[in-house]
Length: 82
Image (cartoon, rainbow, N blue to C red):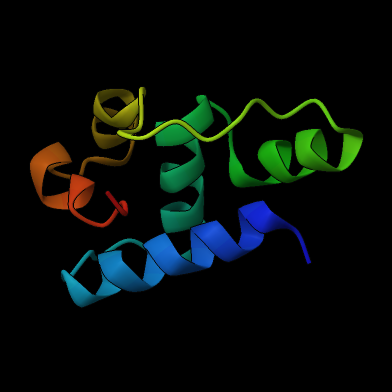
């Protein structure tokens, strides 16, 4: 199992606790778009190929993910570990 999958599961659990209404697949995409500006599947593929850039917190593309998935960036951002 990849480190990215574990990280996304952790962030997903925090987002669910905060009441994030997105479906599982959209939430995973929103998380990886916020981090890497690419979907979950594309991020996993890049990680498998060894080309995924390191995770940077706070997520550099959080505003883009919030706009794309119509979520409040401030409410969603708390889900990312400090």
